[in-house]
Image (tube, helix red, strand yellow):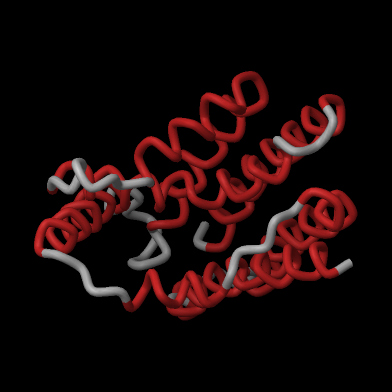
Length: 199
């Protein structure tokens, strides 16, 4: 139960972040925006509730202390430059969604890449997980600006999907594939629901 509760709590911190991003642009929502945002949040809650029981057996909780340490750790110059470049590139791509105000326009970009990753993960899950680790983990001999750039781009576009796929990868094969398909469907449906907020 502790594992499941930790998964549900950590997952909802992510949903809270999405909600804050949406609320920043509340004045730009259409007339039914509040209802659509409620449906949007409920879609994630449904996914997390379905994953709760498997999480009780297979989930390895993220240590909050480790997250706080990674946020406030001292960073070298190359890391700051790589992070800034990643932010600029992601922002430029998100500006393509001109019908959605900033910063909510990050979400369609994130969703598009997330459901693509989720779809690929149905078939080659371990490859997707390995690709995430190869970019996200910086070794002592890989501290160039480009390494840090790809690290932070990877965090943005694959972080949530990796979080879910890592849990799924520990499940028996049939459960793994069932929940992988479910995750893909939820993400793609959420993409269309999100567009309705600003339609």
